[in-house]
Amino acid sequence: MSLFFDEAWFDGRLADRGLDRTALAASAGLSREDLHQIICNQREASQAELTAFAALLGADMIEISLRSGIALRGPAPEGEDSAARLDDLDARLDRIDRWLDELTGRETPGRDDSSPSLTRASKRA
Image (tube, rainbow, N blue to C red; front, side):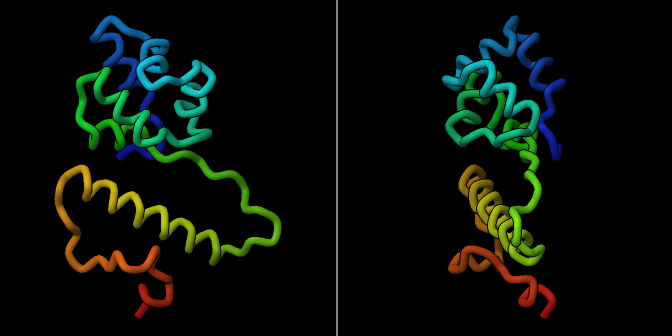
């Protein structure tokens, strides 16, 4: 899995089809500036945008989502402690797991989807 947008992979797939980034942006209804923010990891692509990328490039959603990476987070807001940021990351990872489960049609055994995230305390226990 790529932690950042894999622009070389996307550019290669576009070139194989005789397309460029303008076509990628247009497929998802994005401006070039919006696409640039995704490529530079300044924002995450939405599920609809990833679906459009997959359709244009003839790739499956799992590969597109893995190649799209994870957007960088800015600095912690003033007054926010590291425990709150870790809780937020736990919740984001849970959402990613659920989304991947939906895409693949599988369920992750032992995962409790009744709460939005696991706390670090329960993970240590």
